[in-house]
Image (cartoon, rainbow, N blue to C red; front, top):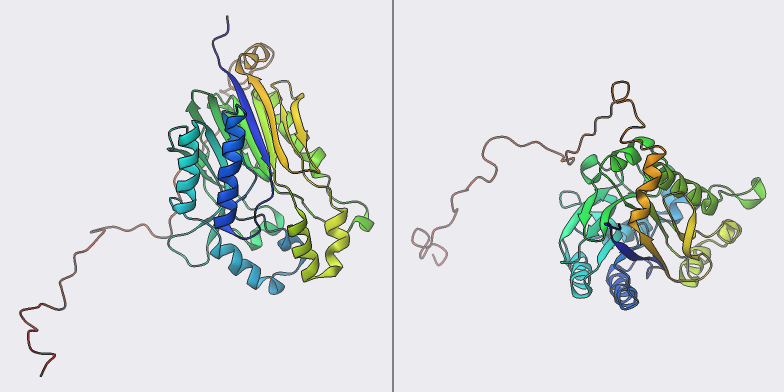
Length: 346
């Protein structure tokens, strides 16, 4: 007898409005509306969809990117903040769960940003807020390291939803921490491309194959469904990079574009796949199909040796200072109307 839900899910294989947090948020809201009207109940967006993935960090040395870093910081968003509030309002209006990749801005530093993902529930509440544990490769030139607070699986009426950002899906311990929370839907978010070398230098990184392998491996091990949601590089983003420096055209045009897809608990691809065109991919997940494969090997159940292996996860949010004593001192007023009456007139 079926006891778990059947869920229609969507992956927004979409381009941001490059480095424009306001316009990109508006576009995200329109995508949420379209996907919801097409029956989607869980809608995933790519890695740092708001305001974009910083492909330029792969193309030029950091001394040439100061202006782009400043633009990235200026268009990164606060949590909570007005852009997140609009996404939450859309999730509530259409009764859907939204996974959104953002570049998150710090409230205690003018230049600190994180590669983050937020999961918003159907009533508009924040279900999870994850900062990427380790920025990958050249991402270290843009984002600070995150922490373990967001290594959580959210209980929703659409299933138990977890997620990791890009290269975190290569981290077996991070993945296991989600498996151990009965994850049923795993969302992995990705950039539009991943340049690592010139195509003439022996071939570039095939992120389509790599992402499919990682997603399938996780779903096979977790016995969970997977949403693979990658960003799309539109003509505006491509032209922005190449117009800035025509010498990067070979790398930009020769690097495979990422794909959005879905996998079932056996690691098999299902549903739509999108790569070279922008759009919304859809699939249906019958979560009851997570049960039978657990008979074969349940790595968080009988198919483990907890007397041999153990994993500890630190979930504290990183803060720059641990304050003690009175948190918010009440300073005396420096000016008193009665005491200063007439003083400024003398």
